[in-house]
Amino acid sequence: MDPKLHLSFVIPVYNEEATLAQLFEGITNAVKEANLGPFETIFIDDGSKDGSWDAIVQLKASHPEIVHGLRFRRNIGKAAALQAGFGEAQGKVIITMDADLQDEPSEIQKFIQKLDEGFDVVSGWKQVRQDPFSKTLPSRFFNFATRAASGVKLHDFNCGFKAYRAAATRNLDLYGELHRYIPVLLNADGFSVAEIPISHNRRTHGVSKYGWSRLVKGCIDLVTVIVITRYLKRPGHFFGGFGLLSGMTGFGILVFLSFQKLAYGLNFGTRPLFFLGILLIIFGVQLVSTGLIGELLNFNAQNKRRLSEIIDEKL
Image 1 (cartoon, rainbow, N blue to C red):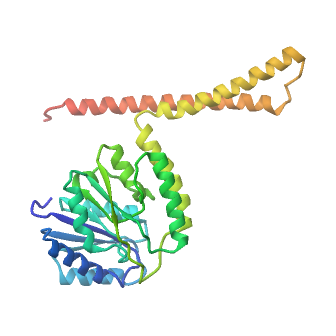
Image 2 (image 1 turned 180 degrees about the vertical axis):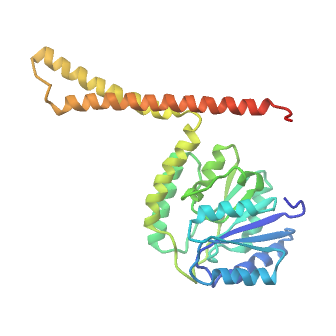
Image 3 (image 1 turned 45 degrees about the horizontal axis):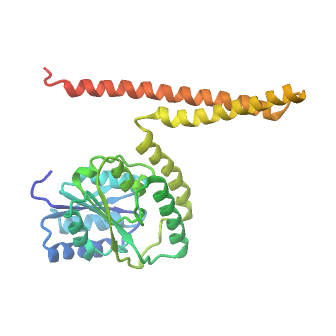
């Protein structure tokens, strides 16, 4: 890491040719006006089909020391673009922005000031969104579900305008749609998370890449995040809990059927409820067994980690 470099801007790009020069100019002016020190801008072209890469090349030619570009062979997704940008960033503070000009560069200083209060991550909150209803409604549903499931009290997990201390980004391993859950992942690792309200500009170029189609993927990834953050180091609790519930339900069904047989002489050998009870018991045993295997694997990994930590020197 360059000790003189204070800020790194990581900007995923997908078909935003018309906005990049104006965005870079806005960032440059904001940094200079606030006297924020040396900075770099990293554009990650996520397989754009327009002239976005050519625009990045032109910016690099005009500003070779502060503009850097990465280009994916195909469209992989925003999470992968952010992960690649974090890996290249050299600044002590890393700021992510969307490339569509809906984020306002003049508010960069607000993020820095909030970080200076002692937070590790500062997320933007678009209080008044300049987006169509087809985009805001799925976002509201997603934010509500994420708050309820994760316990992280942010209003706007989807906002791409965020600031991080560099140490926080080194703890991330993003893929799929996990960029939406960065505050949740970092909060689970002990990093402090804050939120500030920001303005939101109306899109004037290009089209939105998000909507209802991303909601399904986001919900599936939310389950992944909850499992990772809560049960990664105790898989027995996750699988065992469901296993015990399933097994006890199946056992209760069989006890109920046995009571009916003894008290009223009812035959249950061909009743669907009988087979459901057996199935639930078998399923419960399988889940508990899976949890135990997970605990054994986790125990083995922990032992290896302890061994590596006590080795002081190796020839």
